[in-house]
Image 1 (cartoon, helix red, strand yellow):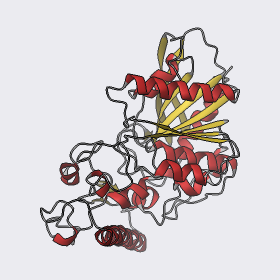
Image 2 (cartoon, one colour; image 1 turned 90 degrees about the vertical axis):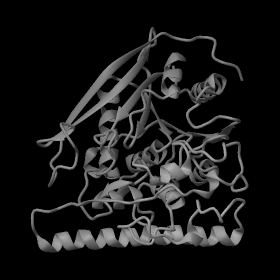
Image 3 (cartoon, helix red, strand yellow; image 1 turned 180 degrees about the vertical axis):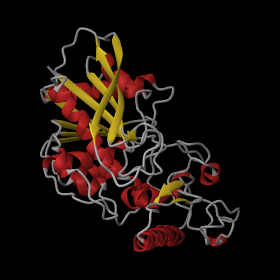
Image 4 (tube, rainbow, N blue to C red; image 1 turned 135 degrees about the vertical axis):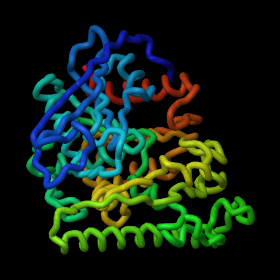
Length: 392
């Protein structure tokens, strides 16, 4: 497969979408969610000379994706692209996945009813994969009426419009699943991260890869146990606040040491072409103690919605079983963020009768310094869309 012959000039337009929503307390910093109104921002890439027939939407729960190479590469190949930000852009401490689904629905409705796109394809990249699957499942068969914390949500009455196709690329099963694989099980006291069990400390000098099957079994069980202890504390704290019937309705907290993934240090675990000793955020040991680790800062309701493996609705495997549109699953064989088995698991779980999986050999998560791999990925997506007549 070769690079596309035509590369289009691309313009970038700022997008603002606003809709009314009433909440019991303010959960979004600043103007994004204020006084009963939700404000969303995005960037739409439009290839010069191409009519608005098909739109490809990239959305991540908490990130803005317009600086990623893939959306721009798709636009340069003649595809209209929207990089959509949720109300929680760049701050996931209070993020509720159910609200992000509603946000994505607002973009989808705007794309069809205001811009007039006939076809819309969802592209789930990285953490956007489980979000997009959750959205498409609920758009096809809406069923979620409450968040995992028990609060009413607006998914059913939002009138979600389903996409016509689905691309799952360099994406994981869910934020909750990766946190369960990444969290440091050696922490004995959530309020004092220096109190640790050395036998479960992945970075202890006496624990070195390759790791034995016995060690990994014990390590994974301890990770899940820590997640569940944290979740039990969250639920109890939320219950205590509700029993008080006062004005305190939420609480923020810190979860220390959340990057202890054996895969990043041991090439024998789910082998692929990923670099060993590093991850997408840097040195795993440094990330483990740093300020930007997954779930480092969270609120009670947010933990249950996006980080609790037993409670989140945004589990990609479960959601994939409820989608019917054509799906393309792209695995990056040198991905230093997404665990190697995740793409195959989503592909196997998807109920779509038309589904395709492709592995991009040597591709890293962000295509850093890999223009050839980026071109191959973009061409693969364009040709897949053309074969299904999703592009004019």
